[in-house]
Image (cartoon, rainbow, N blue to C red; front, side, top):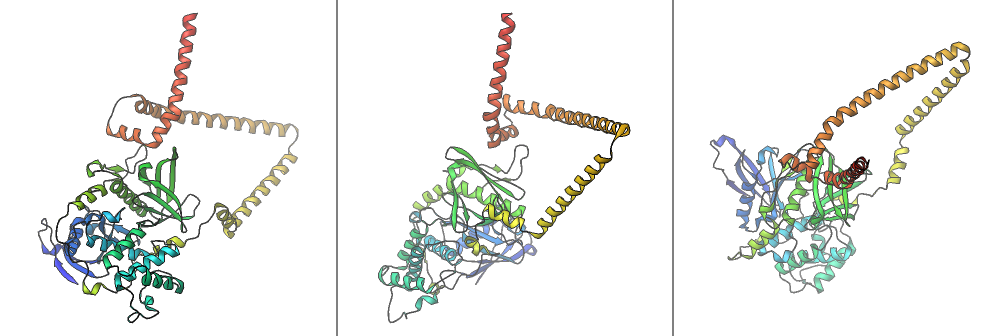
Length: 500
């Protein structure tokens, strides 16, 4: 473990320093003494200096908040305002390269390899049997080199904890591939083959966010180089490419993805456990869309989680985008840095950094709406409430019939007439109140809508409202046809007047 004093120039007193431990991808740790207003960029630069890493834009520093949510620190954020003591951070891949072959340096590929090794072990990178065996064999080849019958006993794969569920059948297939298909490959080539095969899987780069869909079923959301993905169980049920995502927003614990699919508007709604988790999910989506979609960082805009009338939270991704990173990588010219130290072979099993059962994400059962309804009506509390409501209905019906049978004569008629008058008066009063409320709302809403729809005033607030998908849909699908109809009627009326 290395100890380093790392100071930002704005600090005046050593009393403001705190100790921070950063866990690296191979589970080794480095520590540094930082200040309370140190930004995330300082921590990332510190680790990259430790590695001598230039292609740093793919990586980030994250921590686990008190609600067990894994949070990546924005580069411009003051770290000690977001994390809790003791300050333990993790250096991890933040943006997974879409094309590993375009990574310039072996060091960067090696760090990505370590991250994917963790993803496989923790169940975040799902693999069919054949793919799992090939990936496992690549890891063994990179760590041990060629198979040697004198050095490797029949059960040598058991020393590697590669998968959360590692069967004997899988181990035998890994040995077969290691013996026959990968012989002669150096560590760097075996790791590159592993990256190439892993990046074609559906869950490559998915950092799963657990939530509930509109039926109440568990779903896991993720962001990849391709776009926004949704998984239920181990099945991907949605893939919305970044070019088709028009807006990401959240309100409280509800997260919305608005886009276009098959030339139709699509709105996906999900519910998170807390407002903080929902806001974090939204920020992750904004960052990933900016990184993978934009051609230049100058195109990145500040986005808002607003609905029509409220600005909500505002956030802007700070950093280079994928295309700029690849372009900068192509210009690197230096002697390659040392990638592996002697202790890097036979890497230990990764530490469980999933926090809160995320490893089990892709094994959650998919519940149908019908099953949810059956479970709801089987609930004893629900059954008791329904029975109580039925009993109240029966009592009311018996009382009404008994009262009707006792009514008669003139007195009965008078009472009915009086009751009827009271009901009429109450009904008239309710209608009057309703009309007053409607008129008040219209007096405020109609001028505002006309200002938005018909004026050329282009202030920022009105511009943001006009850009929302909900407002555009209202404008084109409802307002424009209504306006054409009114103008047509007015024109016909004017023609009749002039003809008379």
